[in-house]
Every structure is written in C-alpha cells, then in structure tokens.
Image 1 (tube, rainbow, N blue to C red):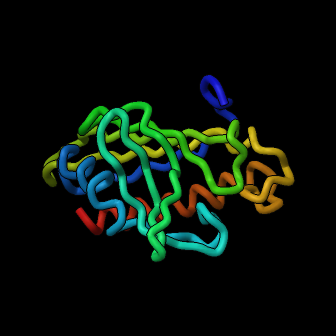
Image 2 (image 1 turned 135 degrees about the vertical axis):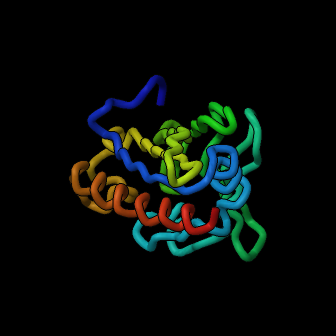
Length: 164
C-alpha cells in the first residue's frame, strides 16, 4: 500500500494516562508484552497467540513470538520519535505482500493540577483497502469493523494506563 489510507477507514481512540509522555511511550514500546491482551477476533495469526515486542528504533519492527519460537512480523516502524510519536505498518498473517494498514500513536502532554498526564491517541487506518471477503474483516462492513477495532483499542489503552 502506498501513501496514506483514506480517512474514512480510520479507527481513532484516545485515553489520558496519569504519567508523563516519556514514561507512557516507554511503557507502550518497551513493555507492550505486559499490557497487550490478544483478542480472539483480531489475531495476527489465526489460532495462535504469542508475546508482542518492539524492536525499538527507526528501523525496528513489531513482532509476535510464539511458544515454539517462531516469529511473525506485525509491522515495521516508519516513525520513531520518543516520547511524542510512533508510526508503523500493521498486518496480519492473512494479508498478501501488498496489503497492510497503518498504526499511528501520539503521546501528548496534557498535565493539569492532578499532575503529569499524557493523552495517548491511536489512529489505525486502511481497513477499507482490504476486500470485503478478506479474513481480517470477518465479514463485517467497514463501519462495524471499525467499531469493533476501536473497542479493542480502548481496552488495550486501559491496560496500558494500568501498567504505567
């Protein structure tokens, strides 16, 4: 996929975390395996759940490692800008070589009288670039898929907030 996916395919979720951006960015990237909870519907590889980890830095990857030691590359980092921003490609095992979505995560300081806080904003785009019968869409029309994916990201961000 080239260029930015159409805005109509975007999942957008945000949550405030009671910690400064550097701690939240580090928790998101260094400890994703601690707060990430697999979802039976949105598995990277059908029937398998592994441990997620970032290979950090501008040329890093997001990988899922399974109990047998095999690794699936979920995505490649496109922007690594700690503690402000992270952008990476995103794919599932059923994607062809030319199919991917894009994940963008922003970490914005929004401190107030309660102390340092970070607004974590997740934008996940490109789901409408997959054919309607693609396994990753589970037969859902794009709006339903977006809603389900947004609900999952909300759950994940609450897990991140609990882990910081």
